[in-house]
Image (tube, rainbow, N blue to C red):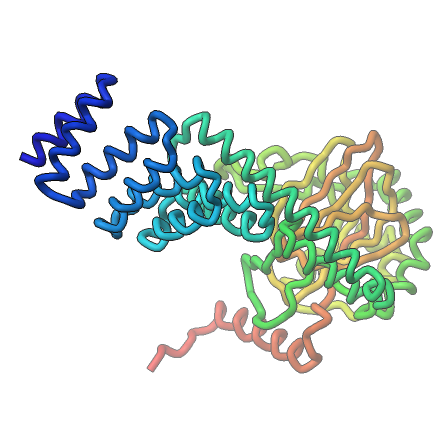
Amino acid sequence: MVGRLLQQAVEARRQGRPAEAEHALSEALKSQPGEPQALNLLGLIALDRHDFGAAHGYFLKAAQADPKEAALWMNVASAARGLLDAEGERHALLQAIAIDQRNFMAQMRLAQLQQRLKEAQAAADSWGKVLAMAAAMGDIPPALAATLDEGRAFVRDHNARFAAFVEAGVADRLGTVDMVARRRFQACLDHEFGRRSLYQNQCSGLHYPFLPADEFFDRRHFPWMAQLEAQTDAIRAEFLALVDKEGASVRPYVRQDAGTPGNKWTALDGSLDWGAAFLWEYGVRNEAVCTACPQTVAALEALPRADIPGRAPSAFFSLLKPGSHIPAHTGVTNTRAIIHLPLIVPPGCSFRVGGETRAWEEGKAFAFDDTIDHEAWNDSDHLRVVLIFDVWNPHLSLEEQQLLKQFYATADASKTKDVPASI
């Protein structure tokens, strides 16, 4: 009988006959006092006429009768909001969330409540949960999408204000530390505030464990760098003479095997948009280029480069034509550092490693880890030229360098000899 009365009440409410619905529900409650569905329907009828006090009373009784039903607590929260009872609304929403932490609407309404109450940090945290759940949702209705956009804007603005407050608090102390500490601490702040990502080594070849994944190496690791920079003019002059007399020495840097499927390198494949004139390539000396550039060769041979037959050193003039872009990529092994000595750099050229982008400066060298995602642009109208070569990763000890050389020598020897079978 109660079920029939509930159905009658639902239909009467749907057809706009609230008095008839209330009568049916009253009869249902006489037969079964405390029936939560009847109480909830009475609350909805009261809510329809904006009688928030009556609605709250009915919803609360329904939720107390069936405390594990989250929808009833959501209705309590709606009535409490109508009564401008913020704490009552919070309590009801938290009850719904305690039943299911994945209750999307309860989490979103809690975020909105905290935002209205100017509980900025709590609101940002709650919005973070909501946005994380929304990211896994399929089609989102336009009205909900607009609400989520408002939440994103709130979180973004809150984080910006919080970041500004923190940075102002550490500014004096940060101004007293050296450049290395300042750069690392600033990267820490930028990651904490969502302004940059942290990148890890991605080695297509040998990955040496426990080396710092630093995008740009500290210059203090390379005490010879100033000596190299002092020879920039001579090296540039030799390059210009080389291309003037030996233009054929420049070849496309990207040369893929025939039949290679389309990929990010296809646009540069066989193109001089990114050209190279090699002095050494994987340990093999290019006699023609080296003969034409004796001062460059002397400058490089004075440096502590790796010497691994078939692998290192490599050194080349890198030519990037106007309007060209080298797509994001990673290198072979983190056992090396890559050095750039910029020779010809028109305005509008830039280079990104991980989360940091720099503009090359003619005559100012730097070292980076090429197993961290990196890319380059020439947005100018002129050619950009950089001398590029590799050296050992400065965090490797001399003993480790020798072990690595022995490793490669042994591995290469195994290709020409019979290797004993495993026991």
